[in-house]
Length: 88
Figure 1 (tube, rainbow, N blue to C red):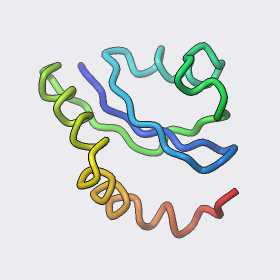
Figure 2: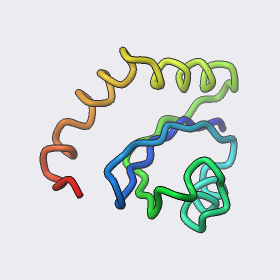
Figure 3: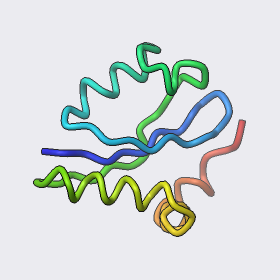
Figure 4: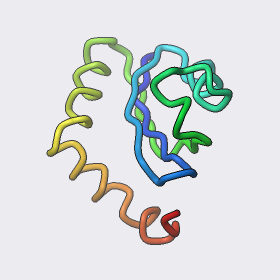
């Protein structure tokens, strides 16, 4: 399986969008600070993910979610979560 995921920083409420073929391992890397891209903004919480059978589909979805249209989609998709969670 191939995963596209969204993390939210509990430190500054920022989002990180990523791809991994091993979601559990990648989340552990983010949480323990082993990932350079996210080590300075942790701790992190997984707030959304999608699973794909094909790597190219997952990478295409990651690219889309990182675009302005994709960020609008995520904001709409997570509207209830975002309205319930206070910002830091």
